[in-house]
Length: 167
Figure 1: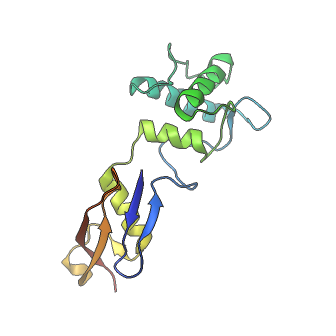
Figure 2: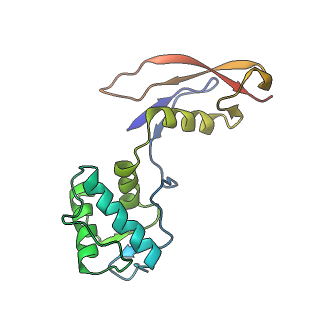
């Protein structure tokens, strides 16, 4: 999903929901899978095994059936599950899941999707770091910040939103 964002001052900016710095609840410290990059640290392997099992529980394509044992060992079943997930969800196959790369980002999208409200807050904070989310009248005067809803089917609807910020 891409968003068109209109700051209070300046021109519109087209932002992607995901960037290379995306983090989510599924995070690893080193690559997991097969090949020379894979470090297969036990905690990271358990994280990936559990995440792949959650893909199946979420009803998304590419999850393992039967479930993987969450044992921290990156064996043939775990490697096959990584490969299948990548092929089905990303149409790629390198057999390795790296921190903050496409595969881990896709796992996070499936397991813990970002709600529109959460995304709006993140976009507003990125455009104006002085915005205080959930601020009250005690935090000072308001100024309007305009932004657009997600681009869907080639159209968008502008709307003014009031936010509290520090001066």
